[in-house]
Amino acid sequence: MPLEAATPVVDEDIAGADREYLYTLNYGPQHPATHTTLRLILTLDGETVVKAVPDIGFLHSGFEKLGEDLDFNQYVTIVDRMNYISPFANECAWFEAVEKLLGVEPTPRCKYLRTILAELARISDHLLCVGAVGLDLGALTAFLYAFNQREKVYDIMESASGQRFHPSFCRVGGLMNDITDDVVAKVRAFVKTFPKAHADLTRLLNRNRIFVDRTKGIGVLTRDEAINMSCSGPVARASGVTRDLRKDEPYLAYPDLQDSFKVVCAKGGDCYNRYLVRMGEMAESLNIIKAAVENIPGGPVNVDLEDKLTIPDKQATYRSIEGLIQHFELFMWNRRWETPVEEVYGAQETANGELGFYVVADGSGRAWRARTRPPSLIHFSIFPHLMEGHQISDVPAILGSLNIIAAELDR
Amino acid sequence: MPAYLDTLTAKFPGAFATSEFRDNRRVLVSAERAGEVLVPLLRCLKDECGFDYLAELGGVDYLNYPGATDRYAVVYGLANTANAERLFVKAFANDPDPELPSVVDLWRGAEWMEREVFDLYGVRFAGHPDLRRILMPHEFAAHPLRKDYPLRGYGERHNFRSVTRAES
Image (cartoon, rainbow over all chains, first blue to last red; front, side, top):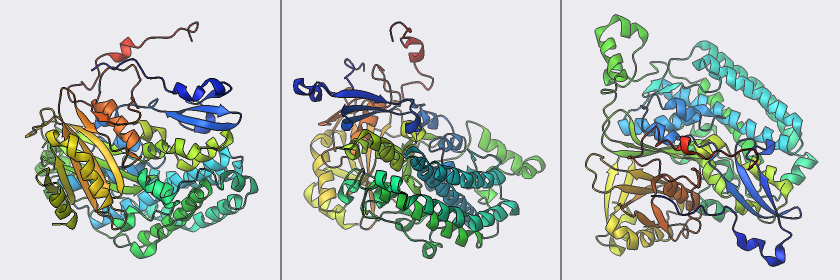
């Protein structure tokens, strides 16, 4: 169905005869303060933003179409690249939906390992967000402290999976491989050293005059608006919404870890409160990791081979006929998993908010539809509302506090 | 049966069906009834049954799907922020002119998600304040997540108009 003539992106009515002096500024798609590839069309009255129109899609690469072509395990590499700041959390959310569809319950060890790595991913994501807001608002030092710690998280991901940025570590019914003691040692070291870095960051930003002046009272979102506009994660919690899927619908190892963390909320709803919630969540995540890493259950990391869901290890593939058969069963296009002709929604609380996948299956080993519920898209849609009446210098503060990741925004 | 389903049955008798899979409970609204019943039904769920949060809104194309009778579906994932309950409302639409009423009046968060469904599936939302393409370029003519749209595209990339330096 061909479209009618393309609609203009900025409506003409605001640039009426009496307001001819309004100035249109293109902010992005290649602008250092947007961090990712997104474009804002700002209508300016002097320094005041009269109207902000986001224009997205520059990074659209058809992830969801690919999800209908790749099988469940292959698609994990694509899922990694959605919110590439905390890729492991995306993998967990994807397999939450897939395993719910297949009716698989991961082993206790797998649940704990996924929880620990997902919480590390959350810390890594919040560090980037907090550091980048600081960077945009003139506090470069905080950025360096944050990125120093993010390196540690990358090191842990590398030890666990072999890849620093895009671990692709989850598989249906388990993980690519079990972790070594080296990973546990690195997580323990991180738990010991991170509080100092966290305290440094707090001291650098919490009472930093410039930072506070530029974030307090900027981009206020009330509780009702947050709910009405489908916000989730730190953006909603900074406005007083207590929704946190880790408490509300505990998944993975969170049922066991309920006592070790609290939901961090604030009431202000401005950029400063979003920053505070992120800082608070990092401390809570560390408590979860601390509790979980000392209680990792033993046993296998993958569900039983008899369930015919997981890829057998090389030993089994090369040395037993059953292992070889199952290996091929999972790698031939006409075999793979047998799925119910059904559909299911699975969501987890990732660093940016509720990341959900709506998976429709047609009986074959790939999704008929792999819909992503992207927190970045929903949070970016509230941006014009948050910008109302603010100045152009508030754009990086608001944009940074929403933590928009364009790869997830455009998919 | 949860209390909200009793409320719905009392208010909209015969307007919907229900189904369930794992922990997902669904309310299905047929393509014939969706135009008149969808918005009142969602409003009832929002105002009277506590489902105040639109967690998700996405489209599905059921072309040649086993057992499917309708072509498109839009899934509204509702949540209750007080007790963390979830409910999925699924409304169907069919060719040649797939259209559903917009829910932007109920939840402003639906605005971009409906635009995305329109962009990728071509389902129009009546009453949407700003129904434009969101991810694909404005001049793009097809709806790429439809099942009859091939994975590798129709060659749009070769037809992109190239702008010379003099024109730009």
